[in-house]
Image 1: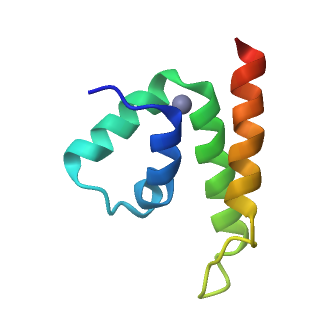
Image 2 (image 1 turned 180 degrees about the vertical axis):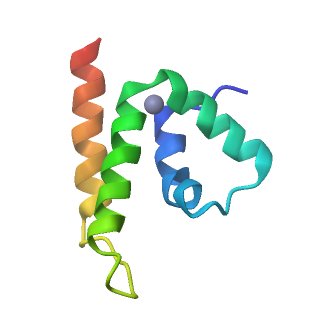
Length: 80
Ligand SMILES: [Zn+2]
């Protein structure tokens, strides 16, 4: 099964947390191996988590994922 970038974005925080089941994790991993856009998101998401690791409660700023997704859509469009 091939998954799209949008699906990977939904899985990223769980992927980092290690809470995905094996099959889903492998699917995401395979996508990340060949997709620069999603690899970049994974890196920046990890950075955000590291930066906020001192706070016990981790929350993305309001609208963060919407803005991120909108920007990614643009990048994907312009890469075509
Ligand atoms: Zn992707």
